[in-house]
Amino acid sequence: MAAVAIYLSTLALSAYRWQLLAKTLELNAHFREFLALRFLATFTNTVIPGVLGGDAVRAVYLGRRHNRLADAFASVIADRIVGLIGLIWLAAFVAVFLNDFSLPLVVTLPPIVIGGVALAGLVASPLIIRIVQKMPPGLKRYEKAIVKYLQRPQELVPALVLSMILQSALAVCQYLLAQGIGLNAPLKLFLFCVPVAGVFASLPLTVNGLGVREGAYLILFGMAGIDRTNAIALGLLWFVSTTLGALPGLLAFAVTSPARAHSIE
Image (cartoon, rainbow, N blue to C red):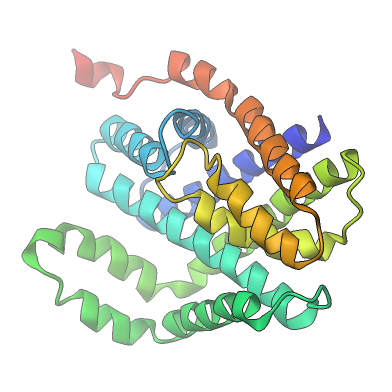
């Protein structure tokens, strides 16, 4: 119950992060709209493999409701990228400063390298703007949105901080589940393994990452000395928790229209 409650709070944080990123594009809407679409997308991801289906749904709904489809998609893409960067930065921080759980360098080094590249990208945003301005004609409609984000990287900082807080909360959720099955492992192990496994679980391979997440847990937690039964059980418990947390998305589908009333007439 505690894991599901915290998971629901992360959806609210995710909705607020998306609102901040949309505001950079002057795509303004009430927080409850972003929250409803966040729940709607989360429920979609429980029936469609990966996270792309949910991202497409929330972008289409937001874009049609405000007649700014390109900006809505750009805000969703930015939200996904910022989320991934926050996820990688959290794993990299733990790998550098809290790595005493015997994971090999082949596992801990990639988040550090990718996190460093992402940080360098933010610092080198003027150079990236020049590259973006040479995008092919078919992608030109997204150029303005990308340039807006890169011209004001300081506005990405709150969203990045929220991403790391959100990922930490997800790790706490699964730490609580582990405690519930009698698995005594340090929280910092979850702060590393959960974000890394989340990258693989988000791939469009299975519904809600089922099977992929368990395989990642089997490898990552197994390297830290946790037996395969507990690792797989933890993944399945998290699948159940996220599915329960996504159920309010049914209500979001019922009360949220994909278009404004006046545009339907």
